Each structure stands twice: as structure tokens, then as C-alpha cells.
Length: 567
Image (cartoon, rainbow, N blue to C red; front, side, top):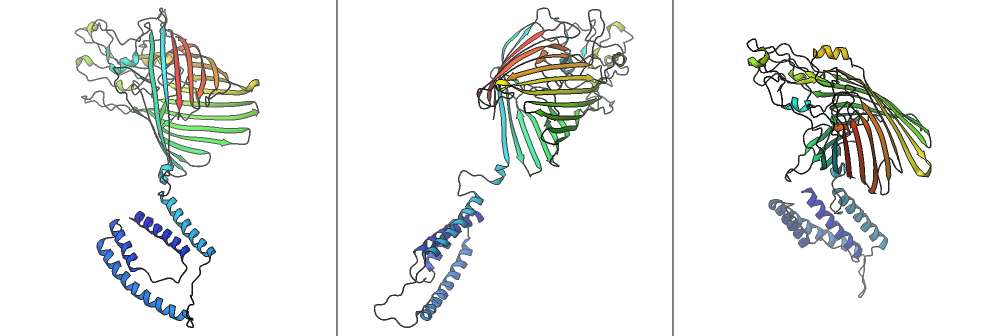
């Protein structure tokens, strides 16, 4: 209602300002008809009710009579001596006064119009200006080429946990466990990644954000969706949802489902991985050459179930899995052509390792065993795993006792992560980035792993039947080109690198899903290149060749051709 009143009032004001410029005679009494017509117009517009209008009309009639009487008296007093026959008296309004009145009214009208956003059709309310959108789309053609000498008996333990338990007693179960594809090539998998994010500035210190993305499932390390499937519709997932508070100029606190707050490579965390939890991020510039940064965070990886089975009477203790992380780093501008960035992080994964159960008897009707919940919610492959259940033999048929099993991680994980990046500017406007990443699991202890598993580790076994693993991972990468980030047409770079990841250097569930098709226990090289097609549009090509470090032979080459866009 206020909006309509303002517009009508301002419109009337513009008319009055125009009429002032045309005034050349003494002002007459207010027009009764004009006032009444204006009131009726307001009734038609829904601004006034009929009973309000009738009251205003009556008031207008009284004021009109009084105005005419006052005007007559004023005119008589101002007339002075009677004029001679033929004389004419004209009241004059200077042009400067008329212009001043017109400009003042026009300025007030335009100010109100801009504030209410009705005079400028391409403007929006204030809340719209505080919301921004961004996103990206990636089209990928992917091929996977497997060695013919690969073992075809590598168990997919992630799928076993998901679909299990699986009976490992060959006397009672002739079904094969879930197996990885290790020999059949996959050509030209057409894949899509599409993400759309919204960020809202609630106040200068508070920001909220939401991002949705594609994905074949709730896999935390990939938002890539394989196309096909009879042209069926594709899934959309909540990829991010967070609230951020800028506590000071240098300190930001954020919580929810957030982007990776740590400086890391995809050997530790996939580029698509988001974290559930809270983080404090510090970034301070000391001078033109030095800056320091750091992050502290707490992230619930998994809340364990409170029951071994939905129909079980025995409840389990809460055994939640957490990630606690801290990082400190620095930037150093060595000179005009060289800069160095380094960061050291420590990640403690609480209760992520599996636990061997107390003796249990699923064959006798028990709904489950007391450590079933210690298996991880998501894993790829590579980590050493062992059978969780300590199942009693059936006295009547000891050799024919079913052994339905889940697997858990054999190692604990307290991970030290060191990153160093050296950027250099070379002649001919070339840029070179040299990068290294070293990871070491401080909690790795082979003896403790064998003790925890009670000798039931089932993978990373060599040809002699011995268990082999390790706690270290190393990556080196070099990128050379006209630009390190593709932003405009003509930007280009080439990259090459090498990775060596021992089985228990880090949890296998959170790193890159392309190299060796994800996880740990992998070594090999990768090469690639990027070329800018247009602003924020670039093409990429990569070749990744990797094999196992320990255990059964498993070699795979992955080729990826992509078109990437940002907006």
C-alpha cells in the first residue's frame, strides 16, 4: 500500500513542478473537482477505502470554500490602489526559481524511485545483490586399460562390507566374493560432473553457502556421474552446506559440509572431497614477502550404530570415528621470479581401525557380533584389512560352521603430511611449478596390526604368504606452461609426476579416485596437459599408469579427455 501511495504522490509532485514553470498569474483557490477526482483515483487503485474517501471529500469541500474566501481577502489587500482602465497586473515567477523547484522535486522523485527499484527496470531488491552463484561443468571421456597379467582374484572388500556379511568358509559357501575387474578394459566411458553453488552474504561478517552436485552414489571422493543407463535421469546430491563467520581480518570459522580447509594434494585428499564438521582458518600477511596460514578442524567421519542388528537385544557402545586435523604453513616471495609455499599438517583419525570381536555365534541365531560397527563406512582399496568376527565353531559340525564376515582396517592412522611448492618465472613468459608431497603414518606398527587382527589379515600378502605393508607415500609433480591456471584463451601447460603410496600410509577412502582407480598400495607416473579454449573454458588430457606396491599383481592405465567450464 505504501508503495502505491508513494508512486501516486510523486507523480502528482512532478505535475505540480511542471505547472509551477507555467505560472504567470496569481494562484487561484484549489480546484475542488481536481481534489475529488484524485481521491476517487486513489479509491480505484485500492489505496483508500470508500469510507475514508468520503471523509476526505467532505474535508476537501470545506477547505476549498475557506481557500476561496482567503484568496479573495488576500487579493483585495494586495491590490492596492485601483488600477486605471486598461491596466493589467501580472504576477512573475523568475526562471531561476522555477528551475530550482523543478530540480528539487525531480531529485526527490528519482531518489525514492531508485530506493524502491521501480524507476530502473533492470535493478533488483537489496537482498538479491547479496546472493551470488557459481558452478562448473566437466565433460569427460575415460578409458581404462588393464594388464593381461593381473590377478583375477582380487577381492573388492568395499563391496563385501556393503553387501555382506560374506561367508568365507569354502566348505559352506561356493559363491565367489565380490571381485574387482582387473582384466577387462573399459573404453570410452562418457562421464559428467556438474555443480552449482549459491553464496549469501548475511552480514559483513556472516556468509552462508549451498552447493549441489552430480554423482552416481554418495561416494565422498567423486561427483562424477557415468552417463548412459537407458537415458535415465541422474542424481543430484547436497555437495556443500555451510555457515561462515569472519571473526577477525585474519581468522575465519566455518562449519557444516565444507570444502577441504587444508592445503593438500590429491594423494591425501581427493579434489572433490568435502568435510563434515567445523574448522578455524587463519591467514596473516607479515609483509610484502612473508605470510603465514594455519587450520584447525574437527570432523565426525562416522557415527557408529548402537545395535549389532535391527532386531538385536544386545546394544553396542558408541564408538564414533573422528578426524582431528591441524596445519601450519608459510608463503615466501623470494624475489620477483620465485616464490615458495610450505605446509605441515597432522591428521589424527580416531577409532577408524577395526576391532576383533569377542566370540560370537551367528550360526546359532545371533543377529551380529559386537564389533561389526568398527568397519568403515566407505573405503576404496589398498589398506590392509582383516576379518572382524571371531566366530565360534558349531560343536556338532565344526568344519561346516558358516563364517559370515566383515572386514576392518588393520592399522591406526596418525598422519603427518608435508607439502612444498616452488613457483618460478622463466624466460619467454614461461612458468614452472615444482611440487612435492610426503606422507608418513606415525601410528603404523606391523606387530600391533598382526596382534589386533589376531592373524586374520587377508590382503597385501606376497607370494610367500607373508604380510607386507608400509607407512610412507611420496609424490613429485612438475607443471610448465604459459599459465598455471587456465583462465583465458591460449593459456596452456604440461604436467608430469610420479606417486608411490604404500598400503597403510593413509586411509584409502579419501584420496584421488583416478590414479590406480583410487586408494593406496599404488605406484606409477602420470602426464597431462591443459589448453585454454576461451575465457573459463579449457581442454585437458591425462594419462595415469599405476601398479601395486605389494600383493597380487594389479596394473591399470587410465586415459581421461575433458572439457572444463567455470561460471
